[in-house]
Amino acid sequence: MLFTVIYFCGIWAFSSSRKHLLITLLRLEFVVLVLYFPIYFYLCRFDYSLFFVVYFLVFSVCEGSLGLKFYFKVRIIYIYIYKACNPTILNLSTENLSIS
Image (spheres, rainbow, N blue to C red):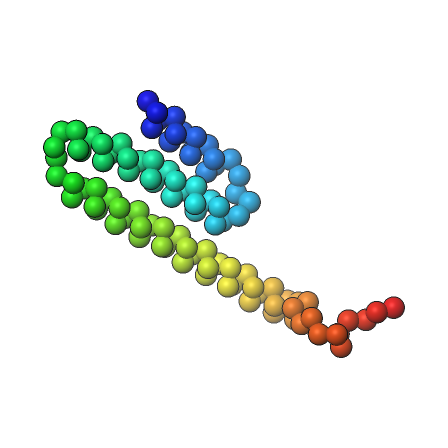
């Protein structure tokens, strides 16, 4: 029951706001960890093999690293386009500033 409430709170937090992609990725990792604990407790309770838990953690780490790679790729493309459209904004030397 407790994991269900925490899971739905994580889903609500994940879907409520998307102001920053990195915060969204952290919320998604929280949901993955909440899913991990009930699976682990279930497998430990019935003395099953914990290889599934290892596979689950490997896939969740790969998912997190792909999300971060996507975040940084989008960020680099955004900075490149922003610099190409406004080259004088990122050049903050005093020669380009006009003080009236």
